[in-house]
Image (tube, rainbow, N blue to C red; front, top):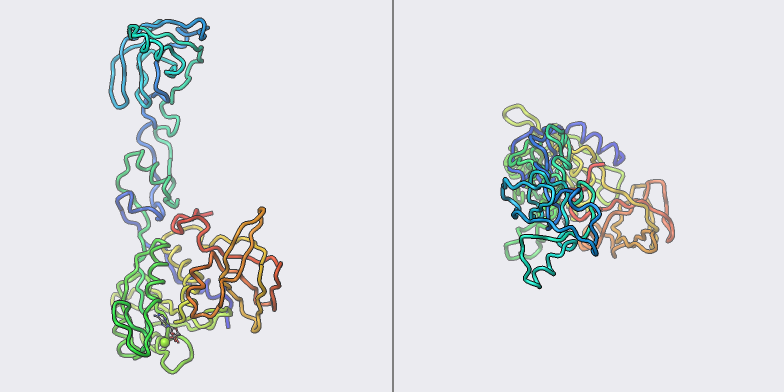
Length: 424
Ligand code: AMP
Ligand code: MG
């Protein structure tokens, strides 16, 4: 048996970062930028108003107060999005809206509430003049040209994971198309004579194919593109044909057929068609795991991960081995999930020296995390995954975890969207 780390490092040794491609900006959420993006201009492009108010010169309102307002002549109005050739001189003001470019000559914006505009409107006094009731320093309420981004600045560096804020920043630079590392296409093939498709009436003796769906959903949530290849019977000929349908994928994931049963044919097909490693990994659930490389007709090799068939085992082995492989292909710099320390509220027995991954619900109380087991932990009990926030890790050498012991928990979703979990 090999350790989880050994298995992962053997897998990652074979995985390469994929090529870059140019994509529409919004499609790039959760992908890694493959170019350095410099700003072609200043953001904002001109000094503009941070408030609705009056653009004036600071010296026109020096010493102004509620009791002693400075009365200025209003020479016009600028709305956001308009280009105006209005000029502000000493003793004059231009009515201005938030986001509008500050007119030439003005160096301060006085918010409406610091003027007598409302009183004038109520008294129907002429709008040719405005009384300013505050003394503001030069630059007040003005967003300076280039204060966010200066022209020529390196704004988003290649290698960065594109999350919503990065997408917004790139949009603010007018980048509608972006070079990113492309998403891997992951073929997903279920195996087993007992497995039936979910849109069919369930025949006696059969179970529905949940694995293809949980695995495809995991692929999507980590940024890959699943290609569902259906269900292959436990027959070398059929399985070989089905596997060949996945030859255009960047990685193939199968479920089932890797344990020691008579019908576990995946490893036979792998051995015949590809370059195979078959391991038992010192972990529970998910002991049997196959890994290998298939050779396409063009001579290029692509990886295959043969996950166990039990629904919980297949999801957990996906988390531990397929997810980092997908992240590596996508060029992500951090492949690990976020681990926290939590106080275990139940006991866990470790009878055979494997690393146990127990499904736990995690709660925070008084600044500490607490983890409790999500009911029966059989590797077929898929609802135990649904109730879980993460996996409590019991080391190989620990025989028993007693309530109150601190354990490490690998969290499924540290933030709400796995694809944008920040690279650390
Ligand atoms: P295997 O690893 O092929 O021996 O499968 C172990 C068990 O996992 C089987 O007895 C099934 O109960 C279950 N199983 C296998 N494939 C699937 C699947 N695609 N969806 C749901 N359960 C499965
Ligand atoms: Mg099987």
